[in-house]
Structure formats: structure tokens, C-alpha cells
Length: 458
Image (cartoon, rainbow, N blue to C red):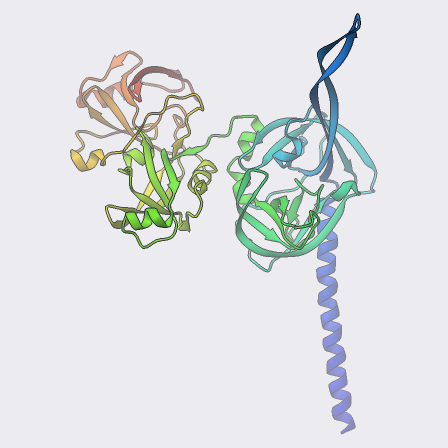
């Protein structure tokens, strides 16, 4: 009996010791991640210049004369960020630095000694709420790597690092609570967020959310809280979404946006009943932009788009955000109901036209391919072209084409380097003689208007 008791006690002690060892291993991993993050996570002090205009009375020879006066003053804000390369580029939230006139960056070395630099905005993307800053220094900096593997799972450990409420650098831990979360904050709509219960508070915005490898899986962006303080629900922009725009932000380039080319209104019960549909949500197509990807895919007024990439459309702006945050050349899959039939369409997004572009909306039309056979096809520099009366029509542009961003689907190329295209037989010779490295002049028609475009790319 005594032997049995001693044996059981020994097993219990061994099990407890083993559990303690495992706990210490996890603790050491947390220690290592925090130590790695410390010199690369920075505090941001942001100054914005604002002004107000008042009507003030002035007394002139006994009369009150109102005079307008404008007063300027500084407004200070704070946030977090983290360095992403040795040159001192910092990733943070757009809302942290929006409208900034001065940005001060403070970082601590491994010994806790603080150093301060000035920084400027290299590039920003309001849609994804991301911005890249550049430290004004030639120093080399410690940095964190982003994890683009998209292997984040619910239940994974996560650490949030930042400077909440202006305190010194703070590390909090938790788990990944949910994926693909969406929310709207201050007029800005977030999509595909990582939800975590690692504590995130005011001042944490722009800081990293890290996995146990010490790599960044997201940028902390928002919290949901009735009181304004952390309530166990925080959100981060995932690294996979950051990857779409990061190179453009670092280079200071304009972020190109995907465009489908439809105007939709949220479907309600009255609309659904009138259309004879037994559904509760979706986007009713009100108009289609001529020459747009939706136009070429035969989407017409009266169609109902119910899903985008398998996710239901529940609000009027859902489809806009799910295409606006994608890149030109990305392929989306729409589920739609047309003439009572449910179908799926894979559509390649085009580049969103400039705000002042003259976009003509129509009721849409059937696919040109459904109405007439292709007269000729030609492939060149990632373009798929076919001849119709008047020139070579761009049917498709691959995402890695050197002409991506210059030409658009449905462009009608009339001449290349002044060599006119008047027949299908001429196309291979005309395009084959053009060299993008030396420079090419396109004479084309876009949305019914003539346009010259010169392109020279290596």
C-alpha cells in the first residue's frame, strides 16, 4: 500500500514538474519576443496645425465694427508604430498621422535608453488605414518582419506592443479571438480584421500584433468598447492585407485601387418581393459603367449581387469596400442573380478611374463574346488583344504585365508608334516591332475619346 502511495506521489510530482517546465518554456518565448520587439517599436508624437475663425468686435470712433480674425494653434496626438527595415521606415495607422505637420519618433535601445528622431510621411492609404513614415536619419535601425504566411488561427497566442495612454512601452498578451472581423469606426470601414483579447488601448494604434516567432501578424488599429477603454475586444489589420500596398507606401506611390464599375443599392424586403426573390440581403445593380469589368462580364441593371468571394453583401457599401481594397488585376468571384437564375462570375478588376474622370454609366449589356465570335486574337506583353473594326481591343491585362496601369480593358488601340492597325493580319507585325524599353506611343480610344499614351519601362 505504501509503495503504491509513494509511486503515485512520485508520478504527481513528475507531472507537476513537467507542467512547470512547459510553462517556463512559454514564458521564455514571451520574454524573447518582447526583447526583440523593444528596440523596433516606437512612440509617435504628432503635431497638427489647426485654426479657427472668430468674429470679434472692434471699437472705432464709438462704433462697434465686427472683424474676422483667424487663430492658429497646435493639436498634439500620440500613437505607436514599428520599424520595418534598416533604413528606418515605420509602419503605423493612417489615422495616427493624418494631417500631421510634425512627427517625433522615440525609440528605446536594448538597454532602455531613449533616442528621439523626426520623421515624415512617405505614403498613406486611408482605405486600409495604413501609413509609412521615414525617420530623418542615416542610422541603421533594428526592425521587425511581417509574417505574410496567412497561417493565423483562432486560439493562437498573440502579443500586442505599443505605448498606451502615453506610458512607456507596454507588452500585453492574449489569443486570436476571431478572424475576418469587420467594423466601422469614425466613418472608416475595416474589413478582414484579426480580433484579439490582448489589451489594446488609446495610444496603441499603429503598434504590432506579434506571433510567438516574433513576427508581425497585424497592425493594431481599433477597439470596441462602450467605455472607450479596453473591454477585451481589439482589432488588427492583418499582414496579408498590408502586403497588398506596402511597396507602394514605402516608395511614396499612389496606391492603385480595384474597380468593378457598378452602382448598387442595398436590397430590402420590398425590392426582393418585387423581383420575386426569396433573399434578405444583396446589392441591386442600379447602373453599370461603360467599358468596366462589370460591363464586359454582362452584368446589367436589375441583377442582384449576393456575395463577393463567398462573403454575403449585407450593407450598401460592402461591395465597394471589397473591391476598393483590392488591386487592379485581382480576380474576384461574384455570386449574382440575373433574370431569376443564380450564377457565379469570376471578374478581373480594373484600375479605379480618377475622381474627375468622365465615367459613363449605362444599364449594361450582354457579353460581346456572346453576340459575335472573336475575329482574331493576339498576345503581347501580357495583353490579350483582338481586332475589330477600328483597331485592336484590349481584352485582358495580366497583373504582372509591364503595361499594367497604363492600358485598360476595352481600350481600342488604333496605332502603335504611328503604325496604324487596320486589319487583323497587321497586328503581329505592329506589336512585334514595338519595344517598351525604348518607348512606345499608343494612339487609342478610351470610353469613346481619343487618347495618346507614352510608355517606357525596362
